[in-house]
Amino acid sequence: MGCRFCASTLDGLERNLTASEMLDQVYRIQRETGERVSNVVVMGSGEPMDNYDNLVRFIRLLTDENGLNISQRNVTVSTCGLIPGIRRLADEGLPVTLALSLHAPNDQVRRELMPIARTYALKDVLAACMEYYEKTGRRLTFEYSLVKGVNDNLAEAAELSKLLKGMHGHVNLIPVNPIKERDFVQSNRPAIEAFKNLLEKNGINVTIRREMGRDIDGACGQLRKSYLEKSERSERG
Image (tube, rainbow, N blue to C red; front, side):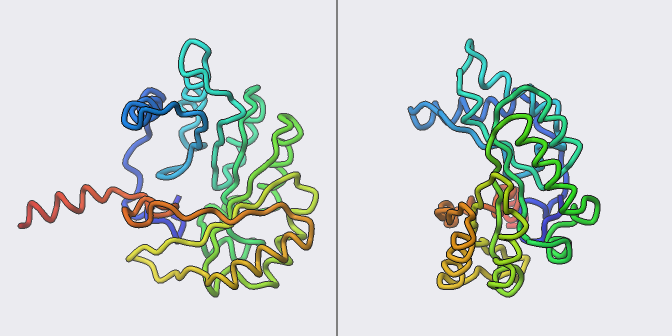
């Protein structure tokens, strides 16, 4: 989707995963770890709503009583805000959690970070999210990557509080992870805490995402086809 802070967009679209390929990832994780997977989040390299039919088939297979039988309430689907997909998913009868990649409190800042914001205005995206909540009863999650000097000041925290008031949601603050092709810098800890505290003061449920996987370029926004880069270096070497 071309989000400016995300490494997954740099190589462009390759293809969509099939439902069976998605399911295979879960089975492989269980086999590698020896542990049962009980929660699944569909996000990362790609936009789930842009692969809608395979997404829904995957969820139904994943949660079928004859398969892994994972509770549908333990499944989260992330989207950058494709309104038609949000509305379709609301009518599927699947009580999964919807997570919106928000990353800004207004259209101006959001357009700087997310090209999709040029197609769908924030007010319309949030209206679709409210429709989802009303039809499913599932609390919404709003993902917000904090970028120093771009979307992390207290005025923007106050604007975000007003935007999400009454939305029945939870804000997940994500300190942006560095990628070499972009000059975005992670907000410092005092700024992150101040942003969080102002949201809480205004009655917004919020947490700061625990950082994991950065050492292998596997943290949020860093997922990429690094094996291709290694292969290219090997061929040149």
